[in-house]
Amino acid sequence: VQLQASGGGLVEAGGSLTLSCVASGSVSSINGMNWYRQASGQQRELVAGITSGGVPTYGGSVKGRFLISRDNSKNTVYLQMNVLKPEDTAVYYCNAIDIPNRRDYWGQGTLVTVSS
Image (cartoon, rainbow, N blue to C red):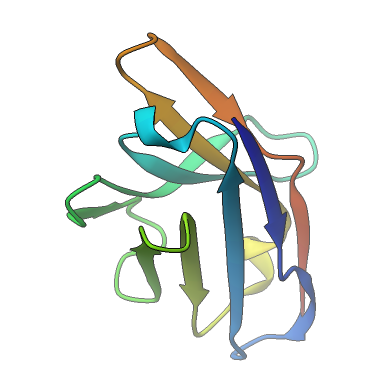
């Protein structure tokens, strides 16, 4: 499975950005998909996740501002980010969970920079 993330960029505080992550390869074994982020000098943290059935979960710092969704017909997961804050600045990584094969996959990351 390969994951290709895109959509990062520079945005002003209060603005919005939508990230996309397209999965390719043996996608039939993918279950949950997640977005993580890692700010400079910080540990990677879970931002949001969504099950194969479309049930979302969110990290506390983004709840109410970010929206995760997926289009299984396009093997794509999205992260709509609203009311962005400078502290949202990080490299955002897409992650896919493969339960049958007991492993997960990571995309290459996309940088989001929020200016104050």
